[in-house]
Length: 350
Ligand code: FPP
Ligand code: MG
Ligand code: MG
Image (cartoon, rainbow, N blue to C red; front, side, top):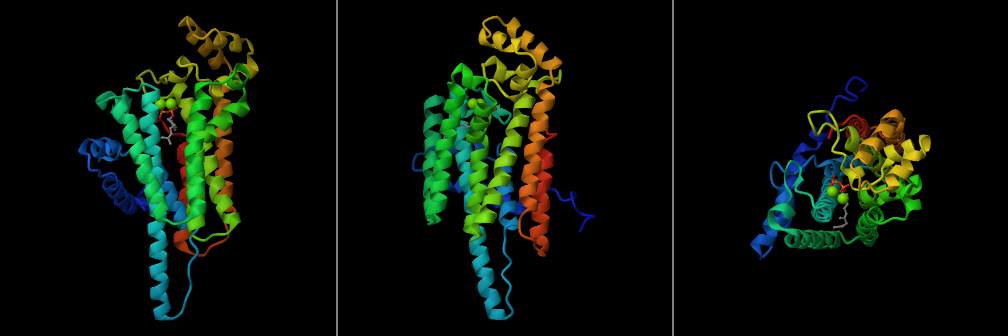
């Protein structure tokens, strides 16, 4: 098995199921108001689907925590196949719900951020206005709730409902914080968990719960999602400074311009406390952005943020390696793909 390790593209393992899910997402947002349907499915259209990272993780997790149902007799085999395909459909449903919640949060986020573009196309608010965008997001959430109800699992309903609260909490924490909170690493990490990691953490856990897995396995699934989500956002925050959006190889610097203080700056302040006073001036003077960046470049801020992301990526790997042993090839390939995904997160460019 070692010769193929790291060779299988995680996305191609679930490619067929991903297109199934994409089709279902488009069906799930049909409404009697055509404008609402077309607004809600805007980011589900072919070519605008994004990386579909969340459904990919969740489908791989579904295989990774799969308990192979062994049986001998032919009749029982048929029953078992039926049960496992029904389970798989339910786990696909979690992937659909998660993607709907994610897209709803993006529609609302682009309104809050006044964003003109998303995924390389015009944002929905830019095209159709804030009002329709907010309502389309609400509509997606309501359809996600209906889909959640069909699973008839109250624990999963509670977890996913809590995620919705976390998304709102994270967004508010980012919007308004006291000066003490603004410069607190702990506050930043909690905000990051709520805003980015909670959705994938609790939906990974839901996948394990639907599989009837033990509390321990459900916890490991959660740990994987949480740590991968944190690593992902840390790298996202690094890319805001060093990303390749411009030909110069510079990031968009949108966080710092909006007064959003992320890990690289927090680490830089540890080395150069005077940076905090510059930031406190509120960037009324554009020169202060450049001055802050000078401090950042001479600090180890970027490097330490990448190191922290790597630590979380490694914790995600540990969670997968702590899952109960399995001889099932499919289980092992999926676990390896989940491990590989942690490595894809770190050096990514966008
Ligand atoms: C993207 O962050 C934003 C989020 C991941 C969460 C947004 C959450 C809300 C707007 C609260 C509403 C919640 C629901 C459930 C609809 P970003 O602006 O830092 O990143 P970007 O570069 O993707 O815009
Ligand atoms: Mg945004
Ligand atoms: Mg935002």
